[in-house]
Amino acid sequence: MREMLIAGKVHYPPNGWWEDLLFYLQNNHVLLSAFCAHPAHPYTRCRRSLVLLSSVTFAFFLNAVFIAAVQTTLLRSILEVKATLSKATIGTIVQMMWDVPSGMVGACTCANASCLPSCVVRLCHCVSCAILACHLYLGILYGIVGVVILALEKSERTEVDEVSLEFAHAKVLAWATSVPFLALIFGCSRYFEKRKSAKDVVAHWQKSAKAPVDLD
Image (cartoon, rainbow, N blue to C red; front, side, top):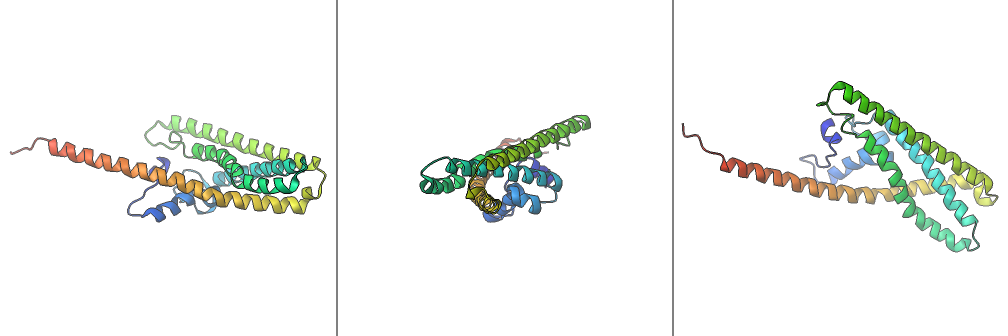
């Protein structure tokens, strides 16, 4: 199972489409993977929690930017609606662009491959840890910038209660809307994976059919 997760497999026979999708979300969704990932996941629970922390701090920065953008304009009532739509679309896409690289580093084949020399595996593992640390520190830095942005904004919407409510709403919305995006990625990956598997079976069958028969 660990080798299949490292290789990025999305189809696990005899599971059906929905079972594979649920398993994929449990191991790739930032929130779900922190608590529901398979024990053989290449990331440890601690590292998955760090990825979640980085995601949350970056989301706080995005939320602060949206609040500041609305406050600096005159057409606030219209832009508040646009800001909500932006959080569900642009905000989600930007958030996923931030979250995906950390997941890719965690599933780095070189850092988990058993066929490579142990010294190479250790080196790749150290590099992946360093990249994850930089990703985490950068996320925290973005979070601090978000705090500064809100501190400079003097309005009712920058009160602690209001900011906390908007941030919680935006983050839940981002986690919810990321599911269809991940489902789309999963669907495409599963289709091409099964297609490749079918081609391999056909190629193996054709090769076996052409093999000479030993009559002795």
